Structures are given as C-alpha cells and as structure tokens.
Length: 163
Image (cartoon, rainbow, N blue to C red; front, side, top):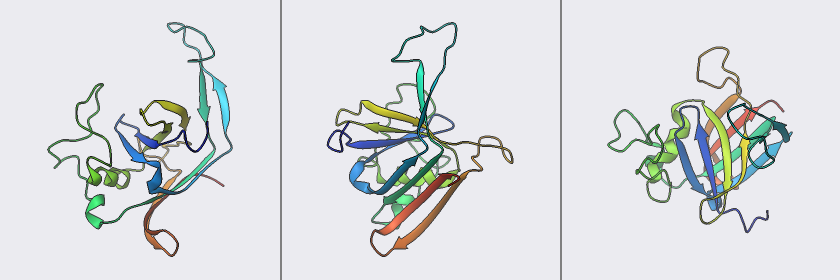
C-alpha cells in the first residue's frame, strides 16, 4: 500500500454509522502501536484473510474544514441521517454532504478507521483504543478539539488512546 493507493479514510462509529473523507482533508494522521490479532468464531471460517484484525494503541487525526456549517450535523434533526443499517442509500461522503463531518463532534465513539482506495475498497481496517468505563458507548480515551492551527487552518483535532 502506498500513499497513491489511499484516496479516502472512513471513520466508523460505535453505532455503525460512518463518514468517508477524502485523504486531502487529513492534514495529519498518526497510527501508532499497531498490532494484529487473530479472532476466530466457530460459525466463521478460519483463514488468513478474514480472521485477522488490526488494532492500534494510539491514533491522532487532524482534519481540515472550510466553513463552520460543515460541523452542523444533528442526526435527530437531519432528514437523511447516516443510518445504522446495511446498504443505507444515503451518502456518508463528506464530498456529497459536507455537514456530516460534524458527526465526529456528536459523541466520542469512533471505533475504527478504514484506509480506502479510489473505489472505496478497504486497504487497511484498524480498530482504535476504546474504553467506556464512565458512559456506555462513549470512548473515555477519545478527545476532540476544534481549533485554528497556524499551519493547517480550521481543523478538527482528534486523539484516541494514550501516548
């Protein structure tokens, strides 16, 4: 996998919602403490393609945005929410619906990221650290800050895990 292969990064949330963001919007992406684990369940085949899961101990993403209204996503008031079901016909792409970027701010519940090619096929699917001691379905290890950064401009700064 090369930088030219990755065209999109999909962020997956605890309730199975996801948003797909062009890689150009990522000013910074750091995945550390990568490891692979073997997971087998008796009702699934045990093979090298589907039985291994990638996980990381730390993730930081800095995602750019242009307009403040790109962060105005409210699933309760949205005519077309991102949905929590398979084959949802509603687009989860920031290119089609810029305001879905604001889903990141709703809850601290990112569970995975998926590096994808131009056809939006998975190249690397990674589980992020997740601990929900204080509130179910919310990640105590996740922090999100909106800031204006000197080099990057308007940005969403996401840190998951402990350095």
